[in-house]
Amino acid sequence: FLGTQFTIVNAPEATVYGLEMENSLRLTDALTLGVDATWLAQAEFGESASILNLSGRDFALAPELAANVSLNLDQPVSGNLALTSRLAATHTGEQYTTTSNDLMRDAQTELNFSLGLKAQDNSWSVTAWCLNCSDRRYVTQHFNSPLQGADANGYVSAPLTYGVTLGVSF
Image 1 (cartoon, rainbow, N blue to C red):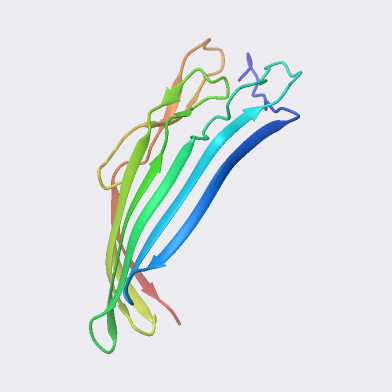
Image 2 (cartoon, rainbow, N blue to C red):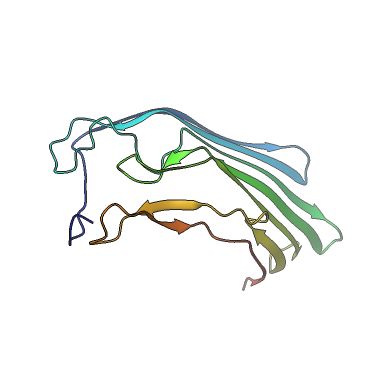
């Protein structure tokens, strides 16, 4: 917000350099390891002539390092049934939570887990799951309120969430 209005701020140019890798390794017939990583060596705005000059600022919500590691199981237990499971860790490095680069959040790691049973022909499945299993809470993005000056509000990460999914294919 700028005063009493919402304004979209943009820059005519930006520079982004980095590396990204995605790997899926089959450890056994039933077990797969996934490893993904993104490294941003540079992610910043170029010269800008806007009211809010973003020149030289880092991108908001763009950590230098983000990575995922997962272990997936799809193990037959009988001629008709298979046990499925997934354990995943998602890591994001520290990052600015505003375009003005004045507020940051620390690096965060979340754990997700699922355990299920499915028909070998994929006609049905039942899966119990948990997201953010360690119930880590942190600010995902900061923002200012209109007409409030330099206050700082924030959106908070999703809490521990769990459930059961029933699936049927026909």
